[in-house]
Structures are given as C-alpha cells and as structure tokens.
Image (cartoon, rainbow, N blue to C red):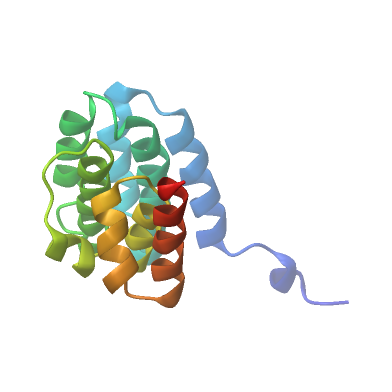
Length: 154
C-alpha cells in the first residue's frame, strides 16, 4: 500500500481547480480583483495557467462584443507583470481584428503564436488565410489555411 501523501493531490493542483471554479463563477464586478488575487499565488506558473484559461473562456465570449475593449484593458492592467497573459490578450485582440475585419498587420499575425495562427487559419478572413497558407509557422497551420481558402472558392 502506498504512503498516504503519495495518493494525495498536490496542493497546487487543488488550488488550480479551486481557482478555475472561482473564476468560472465570478461576477463582472469582482473579476479583476479575483484575477489579481490568483496571480498573487506563490506558484506563478500554476496561477498564470488558471488565469489564461479564464481569459480564453471569457475572450471567446467577449471578443466580438463592444464590451471587449474595456474588459481587455482591465485584464491587461491586472496582468501587467505577466508577459504570457499580456501576449494572450494581444493575440485575442488580433483575432478580434481579423474576425471583425478591422485593420491588422501581416507581420503581427506571422509573429503570433501557433495557437493564434491555427485559430486564424480556421477562420474565414481571406486575407489572413492567404497569409497563413503561404507563411504560417507550421505545416498544420498552412494546410488548415489552404483548406479554408479552397472551401471559400466553392
């Protein structure tokens, strides 16, 4: 029989799950304060992972809405000392610009993460699909973009 502490869930795993549950239930009015509290956890990697998952969930719902700008700015202020979180917010903003056909720059898309390039390659913006079909970082991204372009030609 294994020692009891081997079978116990590590404390950071329990906190991660608790943070995700709290972030899922948080009201708009309390969101930024809770995010700040989570980011203050001594386990920076775990805390940032929880907040990025929350940002992805919220951004997916908000990125095409007028409330995006204010929310993203507040979230950026809360995460100012967390470069990965700031990058993710910037990439969501770029995804929003591409999706809403707002101005965006080719170089910014090409410098973005595989995550964003693949997300944009699965979209419908012809310009972004063309950029990614030609110059996407991975074969998967290029192929996904080419498939999108082919489907648009039908």
